[in-house]
Image (cartoon, rainbow, N blue to C red; front, side, top):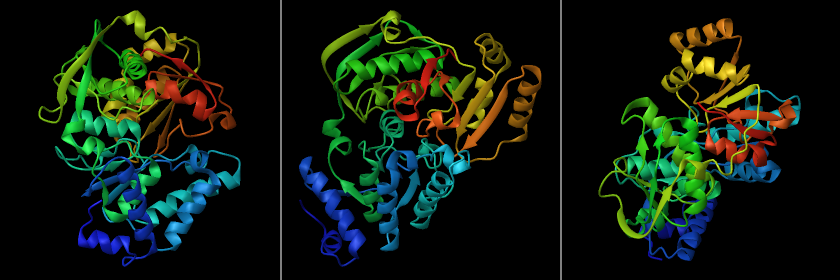
Length: 388
């Protein structure tokens, strides 16, 4: 692999042990994937920050990197942490280790106000901008909606890229790899978060390569459209390793090409084939994270009446670390008083990467495909689809 003079100095250890280790990892991965050089990135995003995910081994690695002087060289954000980071577990050791992970990451330069799976809301990348992002839902959104360029990195690779400010020049960084070969045509209108999610889960299951999706959404712009697109993409990334999905009329032109080899039409019954409905009095919102204006939309009174019909008594909301404004607080208070539904906000956290069974949960309702896919395997609870 060709390295610039500065990269050669990194590789030879002239910038310290941690930088040397980081660039050698990136080079090795790049060579395995056929990269002939590195590319500078402007934003790295790290996943795997929940203690329930990385355990003592991951924590020890982070300690070692920090103690040896690790420091990120580009703007770096991180995924949400587990609910232990908010002090919700009785086990003191779990709480302390989660807080230590957060502190180490901020010590090495990760934005302390990040800890979200929607880093493009903190800093929106430019068209064609090279990134080194982990977190599958953020990667597929950046590539598919923004037109930025990032591979679907593992958390460690994204961290190494943050330390050297570079990643390997292969995969989604190359225009030649951003090619859709399967055209997918849903024969129904996407009219809710759940329907968008179920479609995404199905597309992820049947697609072995980048899909070109010709979908009809109930609305053509605004909050509702973006929520549905984000949930569809996050769901695709949950049931596949696809980093890019071309959405007709959404994905910026010039950032992809289409070489159709297969065409698939999808009926509504197809997307419901793998879904088993159940009941839960607890609803999870925010997977991926939702923002204040999106929460206001979802907590609309008409939706609340619908949720009451499902028997929902408690709503858990995971979202970025931003203070609630007066309007949202007023909405939440009215919901508590009028509908007798509890609304709990968990900023900077993620329910999916938390052991919810340890908190007494057994069944969680959610409209989010990503949560439906991961809650049973990662959080230890049954997941129920709910139409929101």
